[in-house]
Length: 449
Image (tube, rainbow, N blue to C red; front, top):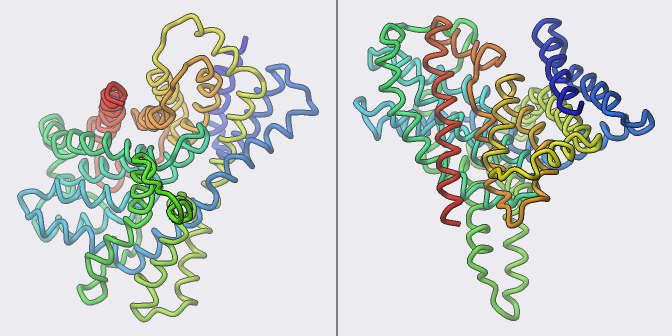
């Protein structure tokens, strides 16, 4: 019965969001209530469970989301993201545009939501394509690979940060391991995958695309953009802070006497929330005040950024409510008991559950959060589980097979003027390769840790 309840709940969620076109947040809450009641949870506990799941999830990541989206917006509005992309493109040259684009997207994608990064980078990519007299599709797959890998593997990006918090994993370790997994995935799924796509859909690489749906886009002049060094530093500062602190922790560089105070201060600034706050304050200066903008302009940009993620925060909270229902209703425990006698690697288990939910639900973030509700009870039966790798496996699984129930699929199809078949043989195929290669590299990393 618990498995049947989950299956029916997912089916109803698909029906409500795809056919009825009900708001995703409302759909998640309705399904959470239905699953809770069907699982035998007392009516007096249903609402409190949903509230605790929603509040617990947003309580963990609300600050990071808020600071992160404001940092990304300041970087974009100042032209810093454009500067990073153009500098790397000039460095790599016309013959290696795919390598330049994948690196640009990877760096910019750390501070931006996938869809925001896509909307930001696509006009830059089209402008470069016009100058080079090539199809924008030439750089499409590498750009998408860079954004998706940052989305799936690298804190402080919201996706892996949310998952790490749900599992109780160390965000710094997730970041370091995510880089170890993300870089080879980037090479395989970006420039190399691009060559495969050229063979599969050669006609797509002759199309000019269409940016009409984006409306008017601002292209910064050379004088308007900040320098590459300060732009790169601002974008990467939260990553630098968390990575340095994690390395210090792993090396146990804690001396006697006053070093204890220093060590605690270092840990404080390496906390993901504090790292994002410090980075935001730095961005207010480097991307704003130092460039002649006043504080009212900067706070206006920050306010618009926060308003833009209100709906997404509710959806993430709804996913957290669904996750908590799965835990408190005993569904997760039931599945744990069901597979307790089976020797299943928890990394593979987390990846499979996330992949299944991603294919069904379309939303990578909702799939990842819901996965934690099913996997957390399973982890108790495994000793010495590496929670950072479980986090990455969940992120990798949630990247798989973006298709027609994912809004990103239609955005990419529209921007690059692709047919549905061409979108499936480029974006969908690449997202699947990111997921599978990510799992392979995670398993390899698990063997040496």
